[in-house]
Amino acid sequence: MTGTVGVIVNPVAGKDIRRLVSGAGHTSDTTKMGIVRRVVAGAAESGARRVLLADDPHRLARRAVDRLDLPDGVEVELLSDHVTGTRSDTIGVAREFADRSVGAVVALGGDGTCRDVATGWPDAPIIPISTGTNNVYPAAIDGTSAGVAAGLVASGRVELARVAQPTKRLLVHVEPGDDREAIDDIALVDVALVDASFVGARAVRDPRSIVAIVAAIGRPASTGLSSVIGRLHPVDRSTQGGVYVRTTAPDEAALRTVRVPLSPGLFDDLSVAEVQPLDDGDEVVLKGPGVLAFDGERDLPIGAAAVVTITVGRSGPRVIDVDATITLAAHRRLFDIDTTDPAPRSEDPRAH
Image 1 (cartoon, rainbow, N blue to C red):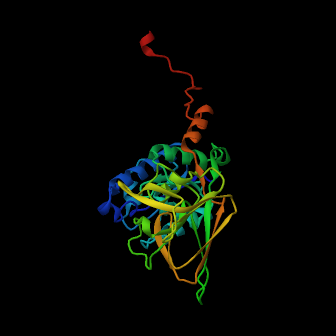
Image 2 (image 1 turned 120 degrees about the vertical axis):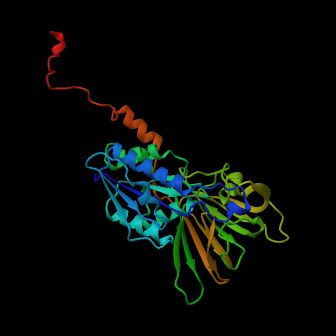
Image 3 (image 1 turned 90 degrees about the horizontal axis):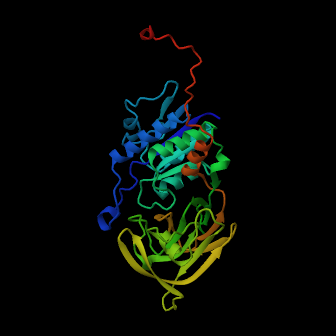
């Protein structure tokens, strides 16, 4: 094993318009820097010999490790070749992490950040820490513990296969139906077709605009599009398949009507005409026009002739279970200190 841990922090995660129009929380730069600092310290403590930090336009990563005291022999390298302020930064860094045989990736952000990591490195060994708005895929994990788990896995002291399993991806293929080339993309949580003609504010907040949702994860306790799936047919990232939901067309009777929080603290009714469970490998075909939303954010306008094929596949990132990793290390006594002193003790002169 290389003993290398990669760290990505999205400086704009958790700062979109939902702070103004709903009860969404805010993760400050200071908080993010504190998490990065604890991740790096924990990784160095538990066996990582090198930490690769993705630089960012807000300089959060470099400020986080400024004057950080690390054990001898631990190197911290700042990667500054991907600093454009767009999602391509995370995608490019994830690809570089894969090329450099990084043993574990710690990513700070929301669902969109995790999606970008998976775009650059589809089966990345990842610990996703939630600092965004949509936090279905990442979780609220203590930075110190995340760093310790990453260091244990990256150094080979805990085997990745023992503490991580591949998660699902939604593979999206778009045939525009005109002279433009086909588009391939992914999502980790859900893909929605929204009745709109432009991206605008990226969050999907109007239930009347939702045409259909295909989800790999649907948690009843989540907020956003995932809550729709979760309250109709719950599915998590460790179970097989996903769910397809179609909302009611005009003058169509509703199969079910559910109350959902599409934004933090804001609830709406959503009328549903069809709920269909999906197996791994199943395909769903959607037709334009509209805008495709990936993992809760509107991203890609499509025309009336466009045909979208979405496939549920178990080819996503390998999410490292932090608790399981540290527990296994404890059972192996990897945190014990050898107090045996082979050198003879000098005689205490006070004994005479």
